[in-house]
Amino acid sequence: MIILGIETSCDETSVSVVKDGKEILSNIISSQIEIHKEYGGVVPEIASRHHIKNIAAIMEESLSEAKVTLDDIDYIAVTYAPGLIGALLVGLSFAKGISYAHDIPIIPVHHIKGHIYSNFVENDVKLPLIALVVSGGHTNIVHIDENHKFTNLGGTLDDAVGESYDKVSRVMGLGYPGGPVIDKLAYLGDKDSIKMPEPKVGEYDFSFSGIKTSVINYVNKMKMKGETFREEDLAAAFQHKVVEILCKKTIGAAVEKKVNNIVIAGGVAANSLLRKELKEKAKKSGIEVYYPSMGLCTDNAAMIAVAGYYKVTYGDEKNKFGDLRLNGIATLPI
Ligand code: KG4
Ligand code: ZN
Image (cartoon, rainbow, N blue to C red; front, top):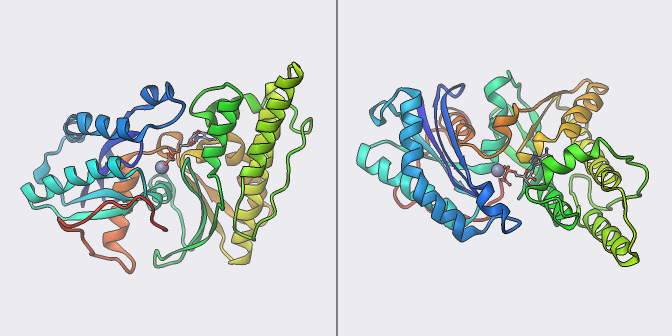
């Protein structure tokens, strides 16, 4: 089964060809990060315009690298939710055009499920599992049963993890995106030199706004006093507190649901401390942790094609296809 994946939910235009849900024949990603950097974050209107400009060429490149034509494609898997609505509609309309012209069925894919299934490419992941979804827009703990049924156990009540990284980075003058910079800087600092607050929320819920505000207040206080501070200490304190919370809640969920497998998904799954700590801590409870290779952590169309494969072959939504009335949805629970 050959699936063409299309992803345009945020600032990456990506088209991929995946065989049998496992073999990535191509995964072309055109990132707009350099364009949005100037504005300190993604500008939705600019993102949509760049998707329109690029998508046809990206698809041609993807098909050519995979050495296939549209005649070889069995299904088109496209992200329809959640995301920036204008950006989503570009990929969706493009998918509908190809579907209509070449009579290829469309599989609508939830972006977050795409992130979760990115783990299935390189690992032999066993179900049931707990997925920790951590990206610029999402922070969720999800349970997935043997039949690929998804249940959201909890999520953030305010900022997403990646969003907090980006905001903290901005206030520290470290640029966008904040995650990779803070991740690196944190290794040079002393995590105990600045105290971070402990959020008080439900078992599987998260709140990062208190921690983020604490960093912002610290920076402003030092600026007002005209004092300098060690950026690496602040980065270390912030990163360690965030990772500590993510690990505690995710392992807690796996233990309570009697699940032996955890996957991490989303852009923040690239965080080196999270990858290391979660694996080490879960091991003590006999739980295996999987994460995708770095290239599959951030937005890409291969993960959408893989999620599409599982959607048509397993679970409640097996063989459910989208038609030309399919719409994009900006906010949609998993
Ligand atoms: O999944 P993604 O590519 O896009 C969304 O769907 O949001 O995630 C992007 C987010 C950004 O907030 C970025 O700062 C964060 O992932 N990120 C990281 C790291 N690399 C990317 N956060 C922490 N540590 C990293 N190494
Ligand atoms: Zn994403």
